[in-house]
Amino acid sequence: MDYTKLGSSDLNISKCCLGTMTWGNRNTQEEGHAQIDYAIDQGINFLDTAEMYAVPPSAKTYGTTETVIGNWVAKNPTKRKDIIIMTKIAGSGLRYIRNSEPILAKNIMPAIDDSLKRLQTDYIDVYQLHWPNRANPAFGRHWPDSIDHSTVDTQQQENEIHEVLQELEKAIQAGKIRYPGLSNESPWGMDLYMRLAKDHNLPTMVSMQNEFSLLHSIDWPYVIEAAVHHDIAYLPWSALGGGVLSGKYVGGKIPPNSRWSVADRHNNFRNKPNVHAAVEQYALIAKKNNMTAAQLSYAWCNQFKWITATIIGATSMEQLKENIQAFDLTLSAEVMAEITEVHKNYPVAF
Image 1 (cartoon, rainbow, N blue to C red):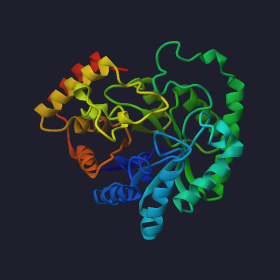
Image 2: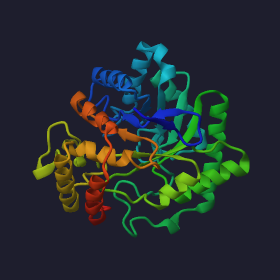
Image 3: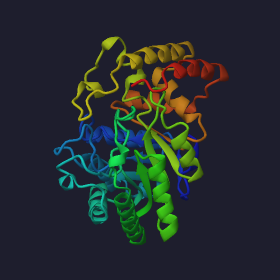
Image 4: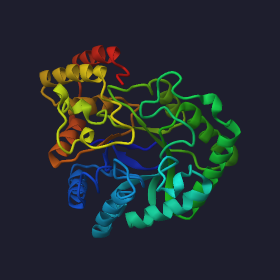
């Protein structure tokens, strides 16, 4: 397993990050613990979670994934120092989380304290803001005029972000978190956080999670450019396009316990003709080169030097082993050329 530095932080992380959002819903605690143990044995030291998990989110499963991880930490206290745990605070949109309030300064410390209790740890390595307090282009809202940016109160956004940064500074000083980060952000949002941090001597963001895959590469080049120059680690989520790039949905199949087999608050927005057309071609490239379609997708992300670490996920140990093996693969120039030919036809397939 290769390792790299997480943005401007001093954290040394594995290039493969273990995603955990299914634990407590489609995966039991025992399965989650087995995944952690196996991942660590393979050299992975980086775990991603969030207070709103498990996914699909619900009041019943809110916080359960952090609890699963916390129970593993309680059973393995000597290993806590060897793993990097990243979690996130949720914003507006879920009534059962702080009455659907946005990410405000007053919510930061209580949310951190609740996550610390569930995670059964004294500190969180990276504490990310799950989504902005304004409409963002994630989850299919990236097409022209899907969002009206003119309705956003720029000064209000600046005031809220300044106050949030001040509260994150208090959390760092209290030893509750080590570094802050972002998720589902834009270049404008990144610039605002970094400018306010610099102007007021407040913590700078060290990481950002955005959706990025062979089916959804809208962050290249503008978001990536901002991340690189701000020294913010770029961490793709949904590198398999919600699982579709694994090839499991080819031919209209929806396997039991798969993501598309359960209800989701965003509906099945990736289930589009262009998606299936692209996946079929990627699957052929993978088969011809003796790898699975999932491995092709993860290896493609991993070979870009501006991708700090790629978040993987699995609902079975078989999937987990398959996905981790992708990080030992090197795609040849010929394979990259084949992938690029398809990718140029479907850069944003949904």
